[in-house]
Image (cartoon, rainbow, N blue to C red; front, side):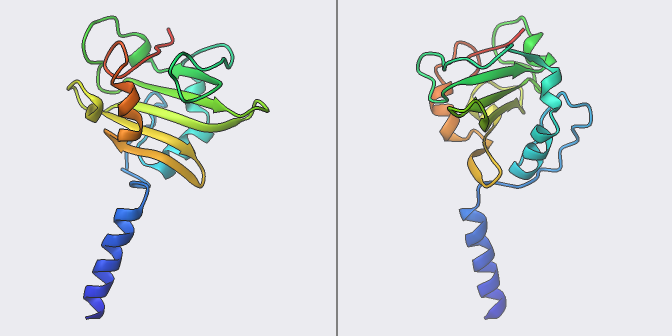
Length: 159
């Protein structure tokens, strides 16, 4: 009985969580963000994405964006892709989302994880420490709007 209760409680807690904390991704080169909210936040706080192609400064949200003032960075795989169709596996972007005082209030991260087209082929993350809004492949919080993007669920590529 006790073991059954523990299994049920564990499954309940897993179902109520904000997705995995870690997928165990190897991201040593800094060009690909990890998946899982604990790992991605540690990676973001280390500033790895700041060596990517980034917009020079924060700006007002583009039309239809719910993110508010932001600044976007694209990794080499995303910024260097010149073709049509799906982006290559490993393509990624980071969006810093600012509050009214000019401080980063949230991060949004997207990373291509499979070669197919579609929202399920991307890992999506939005949040900060203690506040996870999206965390997982095909997360509907993100794919709903990003399905209207001009190419493979990406609105802005910074070259």
